[in-house]
Each structure stands twice: as structure tokens, then as C-alpha cells.
Amino acid sequence: MSRQICGKIHLEGNFENTGFGFSCLQQATKLEIKGNFEYQNKKEISILTIGTTEAINIFFQWCLQQNYSGKGELKFISNAYQQYKEFHIINHL
Image (cartoon, rainbow, N blue to C red; front, side):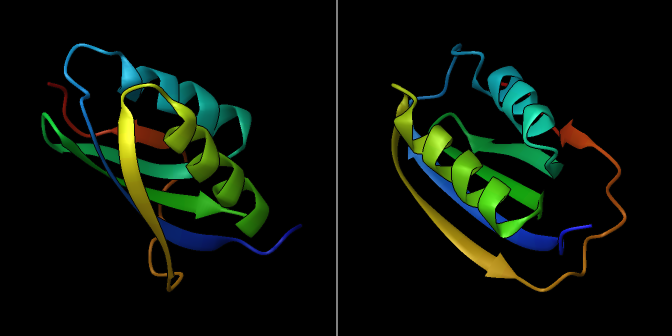
């Protein structure tokens, strides 16, 4: 099994009424990424990811390529969040 790592993604853009959360859920599932997705407000999103480095990098690049994403940042962090068994959307706009 590939080593699992945690990443924290912060995105800024115009996410209101775009379905971005559901699209992220589908993409994360496809890439076997676990974690959570949370709208901070209509213009900012925070995503905690758990997966392989390669999968998280692919997911981050996919996020940046969406029309409603303006800019983003990915930071790799400690493995403290291994309790996630799937990908969750914490709140909705």
C-alpha cells in the first residue's frame, strides 16, 4: 500500500451555486482521497485531504483548473487525520 499523507488545500474563487463541493466529492472518490470539504464563506474553501502525494497533487491541480477557482494553496501536514474513512462535505452554501 502506498504511504498516506495529509494535505490542506485552501481555495479562493466564486463558489456560490456552482456544485463545486459535489464535483470535489466525485473527484476525491475517483482518486481514493479521504478527508473533508468545508466552505469558509462564498469565496473561500478549505479541503483536508488524505491520500498519496501523487493523488493529492492531481486533486489540487484539478481544483485549480475549475472555472470558479481563482487561486489556491496546498500544504502537506502531519498524518494526524487518519480517522477519515471517506470524503465528507461539512457544510453547504
